Image 1: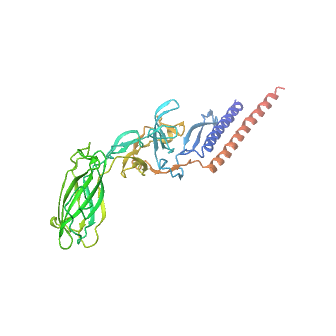
Image 2 (image 1 turned 90 degrees about the vertical axis):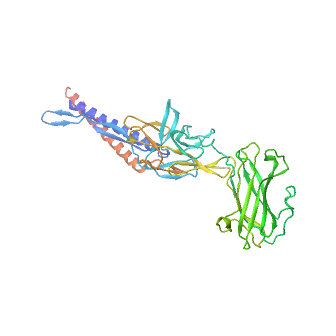
Image 3 (image 1 turned 120 degrees about the vertical axis):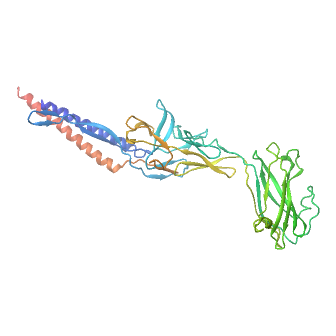
Length: 426
């Protein structure tokens, strides 16, 4: 009878509002959870009862589904460069074992750090997925773990030494060059560090000796300890040449030869000393070494090699590219953080620990660089806060409470009417 049906109808209302309150409570509990997305309870009416000639009577309400609300959460700066926040669509990808499942999981929680083995991981130790780069900084196309702590910068052998200096034009002619007495047989010297193919540093001094009006010799000397066939404490000449200046102090011409054979490394290692463009080669004669009346001095000495280096820090750009800084002063691309996008992201399944898993309704992920393919950009040193609106949740809580109370009245009234019906027999 319809009176009994009203009891069940009121019960469905009680259940629906209880479920709504559970969803609201979950949202409020996660108001401070990084990357959390609020949910809402979607309800639908139950199959109605048809009466001949009088229409239909509903059978109450039921929960249709709990839907994630994927609005953007606010970003908070943390100052930790491995903390990442997504601005826009997409999810970070992490891989590992959690809650009895192994594989890829998806999350908006960017609280990442580098573990003891050098991998970028989340707070549960699952490894962040992305695209690693070759030692030359070229990104690969295969998704995998990002190891940022174990990479090193390979050494680069010096090929060119550059200098800008002035040699005093009225300096006296030096005594005949004697490598055992370099300071006494030269007019001026400047230092530079040269690197071999193993990254070993060779402290080198370039001596300049005047041997006539407008003509100079130069000699690059290093200690024999690092030279094949040399011995510690014995200087070895690894390059030499001549410089010629015109009457205006401009570099007219220059010559050079080198014989650098570093111990245990590739040798002979070709070295080019760039002392500027010469007049004879069509240059200005003023871009490198000059000969004016001013005191001899070097204003710039550099070379293009460096030793091996270890990572000292990383930075992450808005498109997810990870750049490493090394102890040898070099920087290069180490990898790229992958970002996944879904056709129906609100259909992903919650697995706990801020992790999401794919379902048949969500579709399969498309993983690529941030900022492309509809994926959001990455902000490093920041975290996305929960998108829960506490004021809105409290209003929904009041509505759920009122709905529960109203449905309880339906059950109570139906019970009283049944009591009246039972009293008719008496």
